[in-house]
Amino acid sequence: MFWSWCGSFECLENTIASFSANEQNINRFMPGKPVTIHDIARAAGVSPAAVSLALRGEGTLSGLTRARIQEMARKMNYRRNVFAASLRTRDLSASGQGMPLAVLVQKEPSGATYPIQTALEGLKSECARLGYALEVIRLDVGAALRPLLRTLYHRGVQGLFLPHTLNAAAASPEDWARFSLVALNRGAVAPTFHTVRASAFDVVLRAVEIIHQGGYRRIGGALFRHDPPILDDIGREAAFAWAMQHCGGTLLPPHLGLHDDREAFLAWVRRSKPDVILGFHVGCYFWLRESAPALARRTGFCSLHLEDHPDVRPLSGFFTPDVEIGRAAVVLMDSLIRHHERGIPGEVRETLLQRPWRPGQTLPPRRPVRTASVSRTR
Image (cartoon, rainbow, N blue to C red):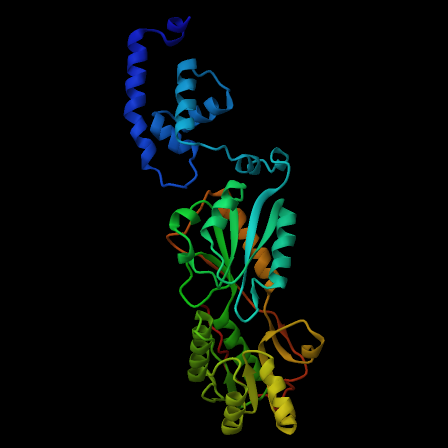
C-alpha cells in the first residue's frame, strides 16, 4: 500500500532529500514573527496555493506532498489565522466574534491618559461599524510592555492602536512584527508608526488668516511648549514664523514658555500688549480673565484646542477632532490588515485631519482689512 502511494523507493529517497535540504530554511524566519503559507511554500519548495490546499485538506495533491507540507507547517509552528481568513469575505462567524484589536491607553505621571476618552469613542464606534472587536488595555506608569505584547499575540490580537507617548524602544522589532500598528497623534520624536493626527501647522495658518480678516492688527501667539518639546510644538512655531513673514498685520514675537506657567504668560501679555491672543489652550484665556478682567474684555482670543465643555463654549477657536482621529485610525488599521502590513514600517504614513472652526464670542470682528490668504498647500 505504501509503495503504491509514493510511487517508488527512488521517489521516496528524493522526497526525503528535498525535505532535509529545505528544512534549514525554517531557521531563516524572524523569531516571534507569524509564519505564513508563503514561508511554508518557500521551505517546502511548492506554491502557496499547494500549501493552502494541503492545510485545508482539499484539492488533488498526492498524499505524499500533502503529508510533507503538513509536516513542514508543524515544524515551523504554523498557526492558522482564522481572523484574517474570515476578513477576506467579511464572514466573522469563523472566530465567533469580530477580529480582535487592542488599544493601549498609557497613564502619564501627571495623571493624564492617552489616547483620551473622545478618541476612544471614535475607535469603538468605527470598530463596531467595520466588524472588529476592540479591547482597551490600560497601562500603568512604568509597566513592562514586552510580556503584554506576547500575551496579546497568543490571544489572537491582530492590530494595536498606540498612544503618542509610547516609545517604540519599549519592545523589540520582533515583538512589534506580530501586529499591524497605528499611533494616535505624535510625540517628541519623529513618528515610528503609521500615525493619524490633527495638523498643528495648518491650524495656525488658518487661525492667523481668520484673526487678520477680522480686523485685528497686533496678533500675539501664546504657543507654549511641552517639557520636553514635542513635534507639534515645532509645527506651531514654524507656522507662526511663516505667517509673520506673509501676513500684512503685526505678528508679535510669540510666547514659548511652558504650557502650565501662568505667571510667564501674564508677563508676556503685559509686555507685548496684543490686540488678540492666539492661545495654544483655553487655560490662558481664564488666566487673563481672572488676573486682568478689563484687559481680557478688550483683547480678542482664539484657541487652538477647544473642548466641548460649558465653560468654554463662548470661546472662539478650533476643536481637536479626537473622535474623527479615532475613526480614521480604524480605517487605516483596516487597510494595513488587508494588505498584511505588520511591524514597524520602513516608511511612515501620516494621516492629517483638519480641526473644525467655531466662531464663538471672544473674537468679535473689528474694522475688516483686505489681506491675502496666508494659507498654503503643504
